[in-house]
Each structure stands twice: as structure tokens, then as C-alpha cells.
Length: 172
Image 1 (cartoon, helix red, strand yellow):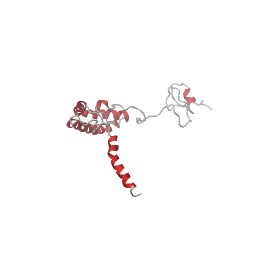
Image 2: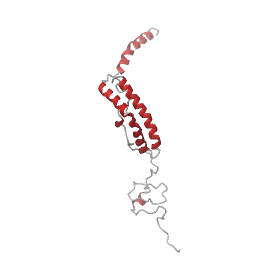
Image 3: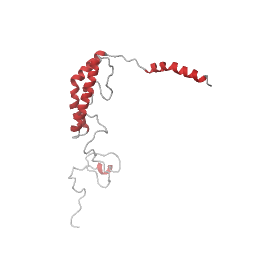
């Protein structure tokens, strides 16, 4: 038993460099592209500030005018530093500091929130959804199936929200 352990340990040590080398991928560098990316990011990094304002305001109206410049300024510093790394390395930095979250160029980034669940709106409420089930839905379009679908399917003109749906006769 004691002689088996050193043999297994020796085999494991011999195989380690081969396993480490198998993990590495040989990726081709494109120095002219990386160098051009560096100069482009040095020249256009400041565009992250207006992009941040536009993006954050499309995501969170009004609040985006405060959060956008802060995020844009941080990304401007990041993009300028990434451009410096690309230029100083003479185009040999491959992917550099970029990823799928922060693309190679500022014009490749999303300028408007792509939509979905992260958009915050002050009144993100469908008028055809009646959670209380006590009143008909004041909508002008058919609603999805559900407990409130029947009242919504009745097409009616838009009314004052405070007006009663079915006025009671006077004098009784």
C-alpha cells in the first residue's frame, strides 16, 4: 500500500503539465484591429456620458438623468483606460478589458434599453387588468382571458374616471 501511493503521486505530477496545456486555446491576435480599437476608444470614450444618460433615462425615466451621467462617467474612465492598454500593448492585448457586457466600441453598446422586465415606468399598469374584480375595466380593447375579460370586451367610450359606470335613477 505504501509503495502504490508514491507511484500514483508521480503519475499525477507527470500528467499535470499536459492537463494545464490542454486548457489553453490558441487564439489569433489581430494587432491592427486592437490598435485601432484603442485609438477609437481614446477618441470616443467621452460618448459614454451621453449614452449613459440616454440609456438610463429610457430604463428609468427622470431618475436616469441623475444615474446616467454617473454611470457614463465611470464607463468613460473605464473605456479610456482600456484604450490606453490597447495602444500601449501595441495591439497585442487580444480581447483586452472588453467583454459581452462592455463591447469593443461605444457605438456597439445599447443606447436605448432593449426592453423587458428591467424597464421601470411610473404607471406600468395595464388598464384592462382589474385586480379587485369589483368594477368593469375602462378599456377600449379586448383583454386577455381571465375574470375581468367579459367587462373589458364591452366597447365603451372613454369616460371621466370619477363618473359612475351605471348611474342610478334619481327619485327613488
